[in-house]
Length: 259
Image 1: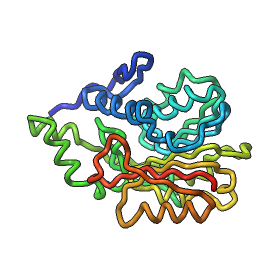
Image 2: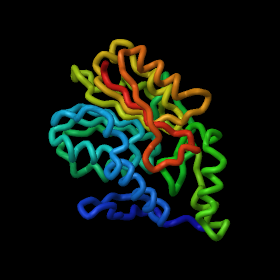
Image 3: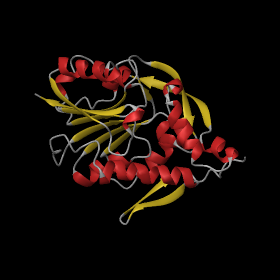
Image 4: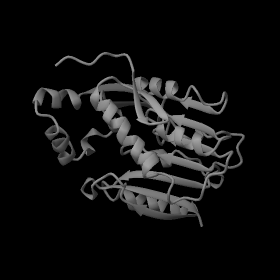
């Protein structure tokens, strides 16, 4: 089965919002899914204090930029740092955020981890939000259910096709704005690398962070480990299943605000 063309596709996800995605129906469907997750259900923000108009927000795992656009719409003077490691996805991210105010957003093309280095990611060609450094953690029943959406096995193979991509890894503290006395929100959605990302925050930077929201895949008791780490740094945590996900997938949204 041949690949789709490589030129980006423009997808209208709402009456007032179009975004660029990879070409083809699966990427368009994913863009609609992400829109409803982020805008309709407000999955990342709804349990946290309202952001200030000039909020400083770090988006780790920015994908094509829908959460950044959500924040920019709510906070007219926001300063954003958006982090996305996969080059093809990062190119779409840059394009989708190009209309924001000059100087309001910094794009970092890198993965985040406990220490600087290099890593190999499994990048989904058509379902970019699923790209991961931990492909073995993808639930088998998710793969089976995705395959069942296609009547032709060859289409299922193409929909779930991946590439191995080597990327730079940096620590989260290295991308925090050094001049900002307060980081209003750190959002982390990194497909299994949540703890590594959080361990990349220097002790001196934790007091600057007012709130976090972390999507956690609960493998090896990872949710409790994330909550323990955040509690140790002075946060009160909440937990719930993402609005559009089955509990069987064992994904959780962990929110953390200062006690």
